[in-house]
Image 1 (tube, rainbow, N blue to C red):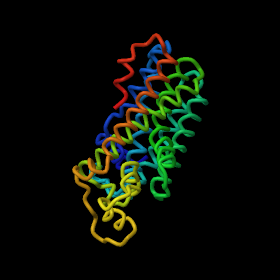
Image 2 (cartoon, helix red, strand yellow):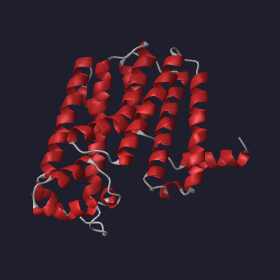
Image 3 (tube, rainbow, N blue to C red):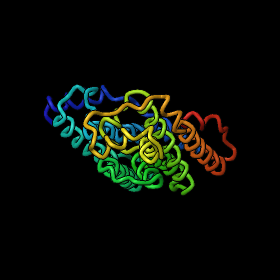
Length: 271
């Protein structure tokens, strides 16, 4: 790479935040008896890089690139370079099951991209479809973190761990979507379909009529959903139920996989 391009990529990486995924992967690795060595730690850093790449691409697609302080075209080009760096570094890692780990990264990155496509096209009409998209978009990245940790430590992974990770991903995404509705409501402005918005669009009553008209294109100005309206429709109760359901599911699955582990240490990764 040219010196200027390399500097550009370094500046972008400096603006990124360390994702919790790296710590979760390391946690799963350690509780499976793994011994932290330099080459293993490098894989966790590459996992973090993978998450940064998805963050950049998501922000480009959602028109939220201001934090990167770069033109969208520059960000897109940089993300392409970062994917190449990711694969090259994974292939050169001196670790057991190198090929399996590289394939794992690419497979789950593809799953997350597939989920993002469904999110971008807004072809979501039911709660079940919405949860499937969330599991693909967000859950796949959590699954990548967990499974990477277990494979690095043992050479294989259990399907129960993937299901546990998918539940963690759902919890995190539901928190983000509901927080957006309570605060900035960027998702409504962009006419995105999230689970809380889907609930409001399906709500039978005059309270959400303006929202429905806006999504149908009859209202040009974005509508605002007040906290009072959220309470009146029962959305806050519904979201609390969904979050509790997936939280308990994740805890149950983890407890079966690791019955000797202190559950409080695991709970730190459930937002």
